Amino acid sequence: MELQTIAVNQLCKGADQLMASETKLRVLIIGLSMWLFRYLVLEGLETPLVSGTLLVDMLGDSSSKMRAQSRWSFSRVREGLIDAFSRFESSGRFEGSEEAWSYIERQLASRPKFEEFYRELGLRSGLAQPRANRISAKHFELQPETLRAAVMSVITIDDGFVPITELLERLFNTWGLCFGGRPLDDALLAKLGYTGLDQDQDLTPNTEALTTLLAELGLATRLSDGVVMCHAKDRF
Image (cartoon, rainbow, N blue to C red; front, side):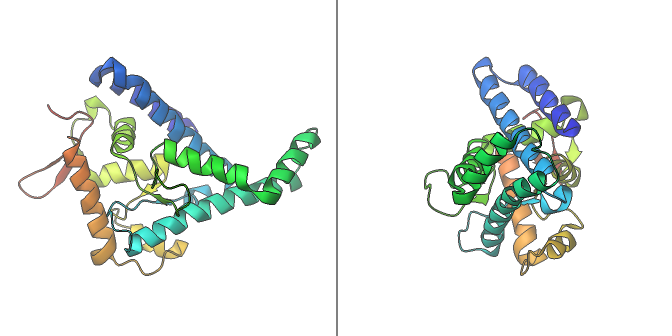
């Protein structure tokens, strides 16, 4: 978790310089929640850097292919984490803590408590939606304040302007967030089994929706040549 810890540290420095005092605690809570969520993924999944990819839907269309595949992303990560406990037990990680394993085994039998913890952490960190309906299927979609925290965790003030392609790379490497805007995202998603996603119809519009939100938050500027540059502060 070194990379994620550096990111949270950077987020705190940026918040201290750029944000009003009443918002700093909220940003810290978001950052630490993202850290904990990523820790679960990296610790629990057998191939975390691949299967731990979080496919983020920013289109806002509940009937879209992006929404369907993002829902699957949310559920497949959850199922992978649940399966990890049995793998931990068989590899001896609960030796000397049989009572703890017995408790976990009972919980996994009915699963609701872990599922609730996973769901609530995803929602409270602002990584998952919808927040209002506890029953409906969840998907990965960043709340505006979570997107701001994520950007500030990977771009420093001293970085100045960063191409959006570089921002997408940093968000993926640090937090596992995939929007479909990196050059190899379509191949990666196909390899992971996210079928039916078209670059022009799904992935590019999803990245454009992300860019629009970044611009609304004052975190991105579209230059005259169409290039999108991102930054940690809303004005220079």
